[in-house]
Image (cartoon, rainbow, N blue to C red; front, side):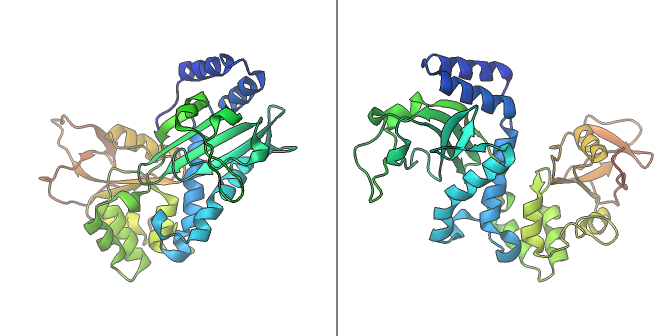
Length: 320
């Protein structure tokens, strides 16, 4: 996820101040202080979608495969998980207490489709949206006023925000990058090949062989392996890391030493709970125009299609 710079955060707080709403300013500043880059928010949303999919038990990776009741429940799960992550206090009349202010939380699977109950009028509302197909998410704060709402309502008398009035919200993060659901976005042929083997270990091997130079989250591993000891299936000593080494494929985890190697090779650096695989090739002492890393006393670079397969180096076992 691309970090939000502090100048952008300052501009957002200024936009809030321009609305002459001290409580809005206080809530915006509190949220930005707790999560200046949006990383924590994005992680909660990624984990919540994965929680609903429950890939380890169901094998699901696509939001469309959820039952209607699960989709309806999504908003509540988002509210709960955000409160657990940020330790928001319970509100008096609304969901949360942030910076001493009551704040309602509304999540929608479609941008702009937040359903605002009558009791939220006059209160601040945290609007949250995430789309797994676009790999994008947004979060903003708005003071709910009657003039901001569409006239129609449902049986619960809930209303939606007028499209033109959405800009009255202070968008802390707008169309930010949601950690990718690799299984959803990978090539269909590759995905079929990954799920074809009956063995969880064989499926994981195929995943790391076919999905290279992309961050693979722990939940993807769990969904593909569908085994309680899924992490063991990645590591060496019989896991994917040792099985694919003969083909020159490295699987880097979130150890600091692995992260440094990924950075030196010029591939995505795995974040917490992530893996990145890449096939490497030994390069001669004359050097190469490709980024290189020294492992096992030899120089390695990301392999080109023309590089023949060869056994890869061992990765460091510890974080040092």
